[in-house]
Image (cartoon, rainbow, N blue to C red; front, side, top):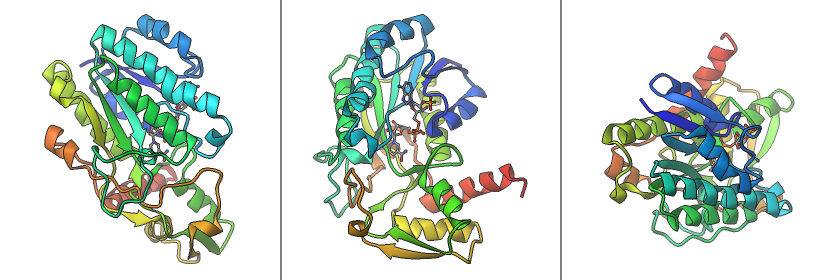
Length: 295
Ligand SMILES: NC(=O)c1ccc[n+]([C@@H]2O[C@H](COP(=O)([O-])OP(=O)(O)OC[C@H]3O[C@@H](n4cnc5c(N)ncnc54)[C@H](OP(=O)(O)O)[C@@H]3O)[C@@H](O)[C@H]2O)c1
């Protein structure tokens, strides 16, 4: 059992982490009322006050399009506060688990990206997350950075919930078919993170050879349009037609990587941990949606 601090209160990943970790650890949650990550200069002292044994940073500025114009806040939260969290973890020698994103890559590959592949974000969000990763790497913290992708769940704002909401209003949906990635259920992220926390606690900390970046997504790959179709199949929604469209017909302020599948073998090799196939995870998420609706 360890005193685990989760940063981020109502976020997708944070919500599942709070539930999954509470069974075997003392969980302390710091929302923005305790630690506003837009004010990096206050982060170190706030951490000192809480005095955790492990930190999981599930908080981030995740509004990809808004980040293009709200750069200052994105960098304050995703880089400068992460720098402070890593400084605290380094000074106190406590393990840090941090999440990053597939958006650190340009998306021009044809094979799943390795952790060692060249990064090159195409937008402010990706750049701010990358600089957060680099701040951790350049610190003394024994930390692992888990790059995940296409996160969805029954909480917060995400593609899964958007598709279900739109299916009640329309019988045809245009969805992008030329961006390929790995949809990752926040419940799967949480379950695999719990495995890591348990390993770290059992070992008495993170080993120096374990620190670094890991790809941390569900297995397999798909397009947004095929993901939408799979959501409707799982929900037995037959009356909505998904029409695949190119990204050029759905312009957004921030450019998305066309291909952002991540190779997750390092996670399995070092920790013996993997996330399920995205289809299996989708079934789990749908079962949870149904249970919540009493179906
Ligand atoms: N969502 C995706 O598709 C995706 C893809 C790849 C990687 N990731 C990464 O995965 C991690 C978890 O993402 P998620 O989907 O769970 O994110 P999310 O649902 O958007 O939640 C973000 C969390 O950050 C917190 N937060 C934002 N600004 C804050 C501030 N100024 N001070 C304190 N807390 C603040 C939010 O606070 P409140 O609790 O107050 O709302 C919330 O708990 C992040 O590192 C993200 O970059 C996400």
